[in-house]
Length: 288
Image (tube, rainbow, N blue to C red; front, side, top):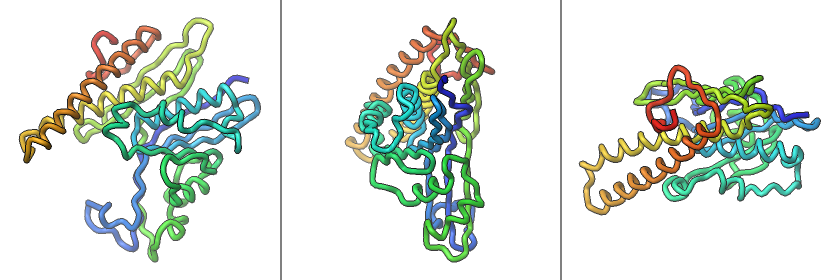
C-alpha cells in the first residue's frame, strides 16, 4: 500500500482568550492568553497504519521542512511514530532548521502530536497546546472547542475568544503530480500563486520535495522583506554597534538567499514545474 497523505494545509493561527469584553482594535495586549503558531494537520496512512499528525512551529519555512522530513520517515517506517520507537527528534529538527535560523531565529520551536498525543516539543512542554491538541486529535480547531477548553487553559470567568486561522500553504497529490497553493503576506496584503510539479515518467514526485520547495519560496520572500526593513531602519540607528549588527544580518540574509536560489534552481532543473498565474518576482530568473 502506497503512502497516502490527502490534502495538507498549513494554517497561520492566532488564538486570543479574554475575560469579558475585549477592548479596541489592538487586542493582544489585553488577552489573558495568546497562542501563536503555524499549524499543519494531515493524515498519514501506509500498510494499515494510520496517524493523524499535527506539527506546530514558530516559523513557517522550518515547520514545512519538519513536516516533509516526518512524511519521509513515515514512508520509510510506518511505525516510526509509535511509542518507544526511538525516532531521533534532534536529528530531524537539526535538518529542518537552517544555519541562518540557528544564528538569528533562536526562538524557533516545534511541537509534534499524533492522534492528539504529544510526541515531541523542542523546548519545555506547553500545557495549552497539549490540552488543545488532545481535544482536537488531529482535526481542525473550532471556536466552539476552544471556548469549551478556555477554563482549563487560563483563568477566565466570562470567556471571550478571538481565533484567526489563515491558510498559507495548501498541498495535495493528484494523478500527475503535486499541486501547491501559496498565500503569503506582502506589504499587508494577501498575494497568492500556485505551482504544480509533474510526476516524472513511471514515478511519483515525493510530497516532501514539494514541501521543501514551498519552504524555500516562503523563506526567500520573508528574507527579502526582512532585509528591506533593516535597510530602512539603518538611518535611525543610534550607534555604530547597532548599525554594524544590522549590516551583519543583511549580509547573512544575502548569503542565505544565494543558498535558497541555488536550491530553487536545482529543483527546477530536476522537475517539470508550472506556475499560475506566474512565478513570484523573487524566484531566480534562471529558474523560471
